[in-house]
Image 1 (cartoon, rainbow, N blue to C red):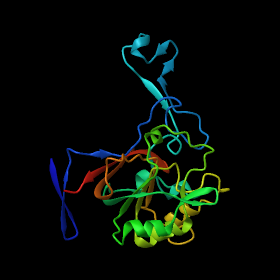
Image 2 (tube, rainbow, N blue to C red):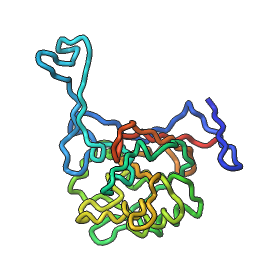
Image 3 (cartoon, one colour):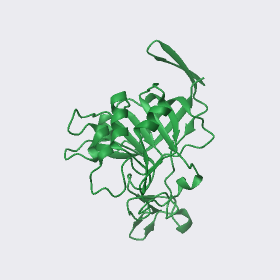
Amino acid sequence: MIASIKLGNDIIKIDLSRPLDISIPLRHGNKNVSAWYADPPRIEPNREGDFVGSVDQGASINFNDIYFNPHAHGTHTECLGHITERKYSVNQLVDRYFFKARLITIAPEKVGDDLVMSKKQLERNLKGEIPEALVVRTLPNTKDKLSRQYSHTNPPYFTEEAMLFLVNEGIQHLLVDLPSVDKEKDEGALLAHRAFWGLGQTLRTQATITEFIYVSHKIKDGLYMLDLQFAPFENDASPSRPVLYQIL
């Protein structure tokens, strides 16, 4: 299933039969990845009177209710409505889903008690080649990212200077394997989010941040085509399934 995509004056070919899924699946219970002090997600049979929506409990169908928070419980894509008084829906603002993307791997720098992604690191890894979408894999890249409990752990984050660099370079879609681009406990400053979406400047209404991805070490750094798909929820954020395709 070879597809040819025209980008400017270039023709890019990808194999649609070889997707590289970089999302984390949502599962019931405390083995699901989690952050922001939220209770674990629940996937359980619907109950109405004597009805229990489970075949193994006598129903003819499985009919589950799902309770989760998109920001706290897995891969999600968010828009500037995440931090604005005005209500913006990611489902309304994003109207295109394929983008040329670059995957880079960064070992966060130690600054005091924190680990950060700096402007210098981004400059060194991008080397002047700036696509629409940037996928950032952090080190160490262990499989426990699929189930890690991030609350009260002060995960790595992006400095404001680093985020302003990405904005100035034209990055529209940022994907990270962290629960947030900002420091966990920053008293609501949200410097990286505010910089990325242009608060106080020109609002970047079509820019998105996707958090809680997981990029296997088998996927090499470089250029890809990104299919950024998310559930059509009318909300500032929605569970998403970003998929990379290697450029042939």
